Image (cartoon, rainbow, N blue to C red; front, side, top):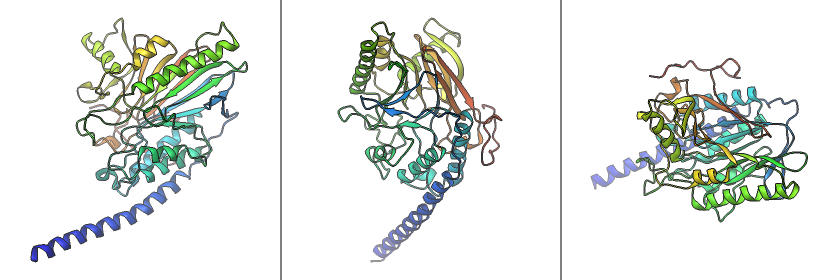
Length: 402
């Protein structure tokens, strides 16, 4: 009887702690959204406004180049343990977007990090609401692809639930689309750029690279998933459909130029880096280091664990000139592999990696310009530059790699 009584007391204490934590996190979530809404709308001289095309995809109609900003691994926790880190992350995102004034922002996964021992919550809806509120307050057109942390196994809300949040009709600036139901994942969609003659000159493919696989449900063994065969087929069909529509207007029209965005790197990132390592980091026929470096332990690439044919399909079709991912927060680099740019975007994370809030060389954004003539300009841009004036005070960080 005594043991039963003690167990009852323990369970009662646990229930009380859970109730208090839940109540605290309700207020944290509310204040986080309110903080996100303190940021002013970005001032544009002539902001491009996309429209839905006949194929259902959002399309920018213009004869000028588009400026795209990749932001990755923002890692807003949304709980009582991550209040300070969340404010820093939102402040950094707002500062970079406000300074760059991009036509489009692509958030390449892990927008949130509702991991209880870091954030103090399982509620991925609260943290997602904070990021959405910020983007809507800034008034910049944006889209997202999901990372492994956006919907953990233990998160309150599923990938479908979170997908519904990003595609809500109440959002004015979100260009996210859930994608076809017969294609694996959520968020497989295309954003196009069409000139005044109706020709698609550029396209941005956004894909879901999923989360974990092979029974590694919590990601403890770093067994990451891959872009699936149905997605690769969807990509190929869309490249061919856009090209066909272009040639119906102009039979001599060259193939349009595209970019692809996802969260988890392809195995080709490792192939390229390994080739450079073996050649003492000097460029080879296949692999070139354009900018940055790999700073994960042993310069490791945490790519999907199974081979897939996405890169080979990209090579064969010839449209996509650069791939952009995140995931490995301190691998920040631009490589060229077999003529295609492989980009690890600068990350934002203040929360997920131990001590990352005190480090600054990896924190920033990736500035991309894709011209209608097919030229691609890519810059890894650090947050701690003077041009990124923040609404709230920037934190002091070390700019040295250890």
